[in-house]
Length: 527
Image (cartoon, rainbow, N blue to C red; front, side, top):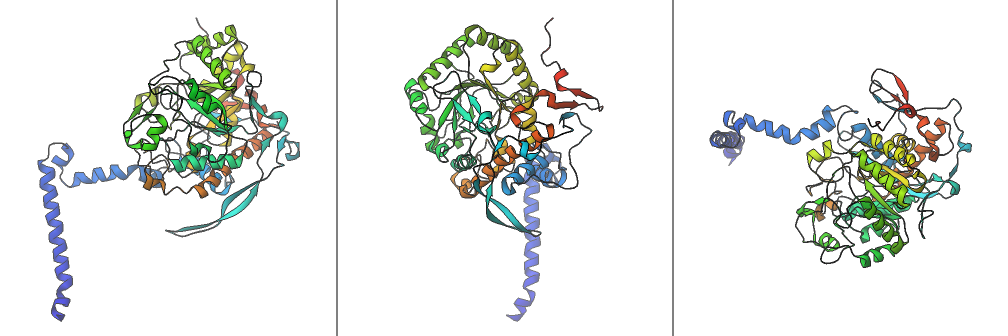
């Protein structure tokens, strides 16, 4: 027995070597004879290293090789800005900015005599009880943080500065004490834990809103008692008859829900200039029931609505929705066709009709599953599209009738402020909120394999997203954005962020030349 024990390491080592040789021989023969991959056929075994590095390449780039300002759709720095705002309610940095100041970009024009804090028009009379992380103990492979109670100021707009949608057109106008809300994200695209955490966090922060996305309104949206904009897409989910037509009866039922403050007709979305799409593996029994579709089957909404074919018919539809619901009705667009944009505004002027708000979604939007060619090439980015819409509405004298909501990678206070200055009244954010509840930018949103449990309906993966913890990150993120807006307003010499105008923004090009945004002619003259 002692002899066997003495020789056991040698036997094990021999078995390991023989096993490795056997596996390598098997793989070599398999790779050398297969006909699918030329690399493996020409370089058996070694070629497998290529596929291994391809598989882990995104993680290597994100955590090891990209610097803080590299990486798309968001850099590591942008990602961390959102995470830190949500976890610690902090945006404080040290040793200077990491922005590449040699690149072209927009800058906020600071005042020589900025506003003092006591001069700012804000309402902090009602404190909010939230939680933040502190006392971090970090090791090489461990990180321990303590979640602590925290009472914070909400940074609401004053009553006189409240943004009102549908003030002169609706029985029940929508009043907002904050300028930032959640952009459209459907249940089904996101899981129930994600939707619930967002609802509760937004409800806790107050003064904001939640857009349901085109997938219909659910109990998860209602969980936080947050104000809701219900989106209606061409698929008519939640407001259709069994044979697929628009149901005024179902629409009226949704409008009777107290939390639903407005409706949005989705004509287009920056991420996907086509109808909505959700892979069959994400369509659970519950999702199918809400959308009135077949479980497990991929959903593709039509490219556009059957209910209207031109702007006059669209505005008639909007007016009927307003009459039935008594609430504001908006449209969501992507700007590309300037002639159509002009036709729309002329129709608004000539008919006296139109939406109460227009959501302008930039082509850089990204939460929806779509085709590469549509995501990369169709629709103008938000900083080009937004001023075009603002100018066109002013040109035809209808700007005072409609509120503009901007969306498209506006995830930090400075981006929000620039959008407000470019013409927006309000700002929508989608991916920033996804990051706040745990998204790690794995880019698996359409596969149902989101490792963070955010963009998945897989029950096991969703367990990783703890609602009771993530709701505070959402609240902290929203409040942090509002606080940052007031910091920027003070720096620009204005007492409230609703006063941001183009005169507060300047643009620097790659050669260091500075231009006033007011001098940039956005809409090309027709010849």
